[in-house]
Structure formats: structure tokens, C-alpha cells
Amino acid sequence: MTGWLWMMSGVLRMFQLFFGLTYYSATYFYANELDNSSQPEMKHPKLEKGKRSEGSFLIQNKLLAIDFAVNKLVFMVALLCIGLRMWIVQFRLNLGLMLIPLSMMLEVILKNSWGLMKLWRGSPLTWCNNDFDSTCTCARLDRALASASWIELFPSTVFEHDPSTGSDQSVIFIPLDSGPSAMYKEAF
Image (spheres, rainbow, N blue to C red):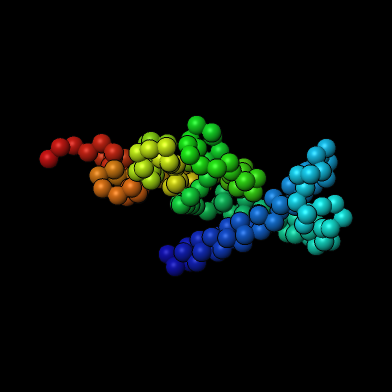
């Protein structure tokens, strides 16, 4: 059991390393797109053509190597990722929030390319600031993603919120078997 936990901590460290470098990669990608743009006034002064360092190519190669290593590990290891503030890409689920930066969109695309599947069941909006006027903001803040190996081991795993608490953030409930749901409790 200790060996399995050690291996999982290594995988999570690789995720942290990769997502730490993802922002730089997305910025580099955005700068290249701006170089081909017909609107020079939109360019960021630090990202203009000719001002990038030679090291950016090496960082891109490291990102590809890390992506390949994590991609191999995700399919071998039963992996469950639970995150707070994982961003929403569909406009209908993005009520009251600002537009999503390109770097966060790329992270969502990378998670999907690794074959991580959502375990969410319930309302698409899990948080509200409880302002019942024009400043009301609703969003889905919590999400769980699992690899195919996790779903093979625990096929009935779901990720739910228990709405019985009086807080604006619900308790997270992750049953591993097909028992009763937190969303639909029977009366006493």
C-alpha cells in the first residue's frame, strides 16, 4: 500500500510541474498567434516578435516530454483528481464570471486529451455568492476527473454535493459503490 501511495504522489508532483509550466507554454502560443495577427495594437509589449528568448523552444520540448510521461502514467495508474475552481468552458455554465484566459482553456483541452473523464452528477452550478440582486454569481467550482483505470476499478463512482448544509459551499460526497445517493435521501 505504501508503494502505491508513493507512486501516486509522484504522479501528482508531475501534474503540479506540468500545470506550473502550462501557463508559460500558453503565453508562448498566444505570442506566436499575435505575430500573425493583423491587429498590432493588441500585442503585449513583452511578447512582441523578436523579444522571446531562445529558451522558449527548450521549455516547449520539456512540456512535450512531461505530457508524454504523464499520458503514459495516467493510463497505467488508477487516478482520481478532485479540484477546486476547475474552469468552465461552456458559456451556459459561466454565469456572472469573466471570460476564461487561453491558458486555462488549454489546461482543459490537455485534461481531455489524457482521457480523464468527469464523475460529476447533479446541478451544473455548485456555488453561489447568495447576492439576490444584479451582482449574483453562480458557478461550478468543484469537479472530479478520473482515469479509465479508476473507472474500471470503481465503475459506480460519482461526485456529488450534499445540499443539506446551510453554507454556500456543499459537502462533497464520493461514493465508490452503488449505494444510496446523497442527493436523494429517504425520509427517516
